[in-house]
Length: 143
Length: 162
Image 1 (tube, rainbow over the protein chains, first blue to last red):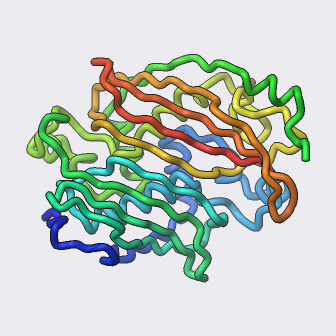
Image 2 (cartoon, chains in turn cyan, red):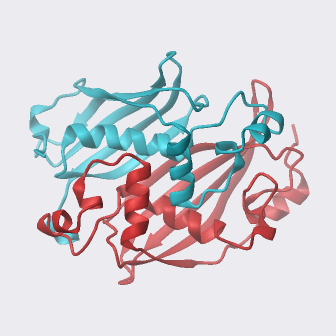
Image 3 (cartoon, rainbow over the protein chains, first blue to last red):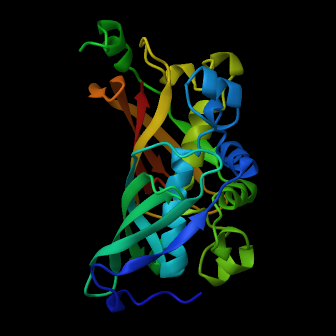
């Protein structure tokens, strides 16, 4: 996969939207892969009765991973994430589709790094997670 | 205000043990599959080697897997009713927890075979008035290093109790 030339980007360039629609199996895989035992991701009666949610929650860190993945699919594999900040503004529930996109905030003139604003939004238009990520050209020394 | 009691403040002055996590190819492939990763260096050793790595490469957010196993793969009697490690849950009148946010700086890649050490600290606890009542924010910091002592990542994580 070709890596994008960072110098061809400018502030405001849009990150193409990628849509993720995690199903029950996807939520289970994420919980299992991380050994995340929190019941609000798999136990519906507990989630509704104890926590008062209308449905099972899509994990915050899974949404963080979707933000990164949506950027990686566009940037290509010669850049890697070097920093990421995100926060959750609203819950996302099983059954929601999450459109993940963003915009370029800044680029390094040497083409070495790109900074992106990223967001995840439900099909109904609720922004659930926003973040800022920096991707840098992968250096040989770190391999 | 005053959801955070003296008891909770005292609780927050706590130390957590360090843990080691030996990264296997299956750990990497499970997480990469779960997040819908597309880069073949997470699935195919040949792709990882031809990209210049020693072995299968973990997705950049894999430190989450390391820290969850370190502090949640424990005797189930040490878990709260909601599945959280009791060691993480402050003595508050509310125990409904949600993820707040994350800030992570990544210094270098993790590859299969690495032994990652994670150190955990509770760095802050504070409250704010939310739309439906008080919210308590608990902030943790995790520092990760590899078997050569090289820094791998620093992650700050906020959990919200409402």
